Image 1 (tube, rainbow, N blue to C red):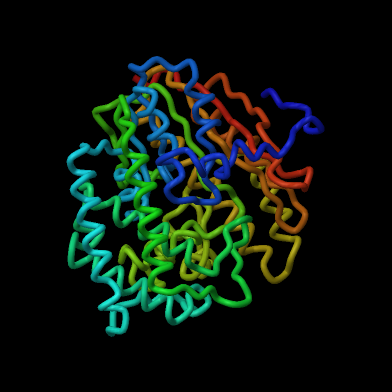
Image 2: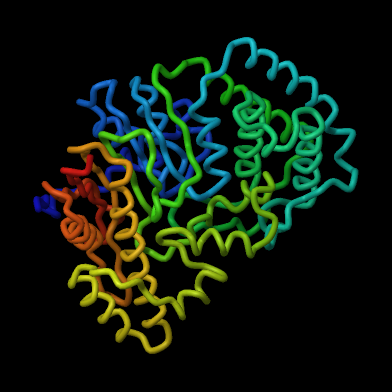
Length: 414
């Protein structure tokens, strides 16, 4: 296992979501845990166009789109229906005539929004919604939403259609008019909500929409699609993949859909908090709401996990009388689920397939969770070969937190 000299590693913002901001489709919606197109492209650099690529933790479909842009065929997985919808819209090619027609539709419907602003329009049941938007801004957003629905239909009705682009622009709008700050891992809110007038909101929407449309002008030479699959239980597929490039959630007890809640409520992909909790429970590395209460009673399957994991969770369990057991269970479940993922991943791998997992370590009560080491040992136990771990960047000013590329090869799986 090859490790870099930690003293020479820097934070490398160009390897994070910040690098994607102005890169066409990659900049449509931001997600803090997303990795950068630059990093993916470096891993794809010597890949032939005939190589089939898989990302089992799709997120915002960075890997899928990057692969399609280079002429490859890619399939990505996600358990979140919003991300499946968004990723497919992001990776699709659109005709010039469809884009031109949608532009005319949007220009026409924007002229009618102001008439609906003072109506009793639907707003999402988002917790503490008043800290996100002022009452007036909320009225304007709700009026724009119902106008879009009447003109092009609900988001769930626009699968594989150009109308998705108008909804993606709306998603970007709700964040840009909100008082939420996504500049760091912990989301925060301004002390006072922002206030916008009708003209401000509609002009901003038009600007965002134009950006989305213009970024579709460049067609991808390859293909990519997102499939609703639980990465812990990957089924057999006709396609066998030669290369896996992915970044699963990190073991940091971060809600899987934390930043996605506003999009998912406004788009009606979730309608109550319970649904968010259920999705967090299914996710690797997300435990909030109902997921947290279930974690207290969770017990693992009979599978042989690395000894170093048991040493780590033992220390975490004893470190805090109130939350030690809960967080030890969380770390245990995280690596248990990743083991299930690596085991079922073989169902879709070609012989000699190459794997790249971008992962981060974490600490609980001062106890280091060496993610790269534990995952590497799980891979080894499952028969993967040529396993290496390389530090690629420092995650913050804390010298102990790094991001790694854990790579391996799958042999004799065909």
